[in-house]
Amino acid sequence: MLKRALGGLLLALWLSGCAMQPAPAPSLAALPVAPAQTLQLRFEHAGETHLMIGVLRRDTDSLRLVLLSPQGQRLLSWQRDASGAQMHSAVWQPPFDAAWLGSRLAWSLWPAEALQQAFSGSRWRLQGSPQERAIYYRKQLIAKVKMDGHCRLIDDLDAGYQLTITVADAARNTTPCPSF
Image 1 (tube, rainbow, N blue to C red):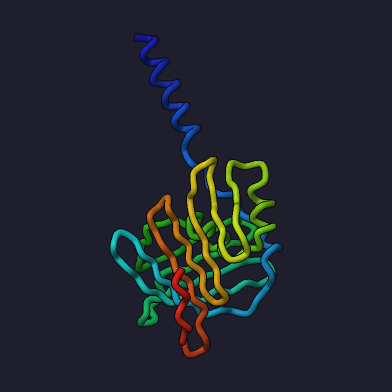
Image 2 (image 1 turned 60 degrees about the vertical axis):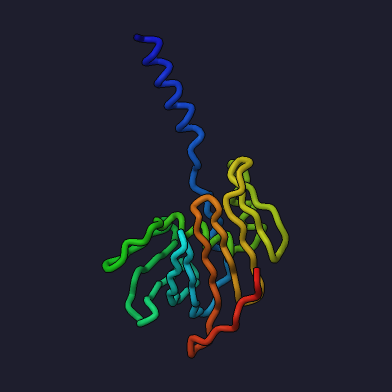
């Protein structure tokens, strides 16, 4: 009986060590301060597509993203500052948490050098070119990120999501993204 209990405990400890750890976040200082951007976001998962409008703002001490429905209703507010990532939503419970959204934004917004520095000493790894990135946890490919000027495609292979982010002009017009 004791052997079985110890075996179960060892198996649980081993499996918990195999669980994916959150991706380390790059320094906010590595992302240049920029004027607010209006974005069109397309979330795709399990055959469903959700279009949203986003407003992204980077100031000296935080990065903020507000997601709106196509009709303009505020769906959620996300912020990353010295305290970490937080998300607030009164009308919509997204299928992801603040850390997930923050890591996916970081993988597409931060310079590769900042991601490499953040991943240093962890089980996370970045490979790729200026236009394409591959994010690995241990030896498992977690996500692919493709970037072309005003368009970013984040293909989260682990969670089964695709997020396309397109920068829009003041009238919310976007230029079609290339076929990734």
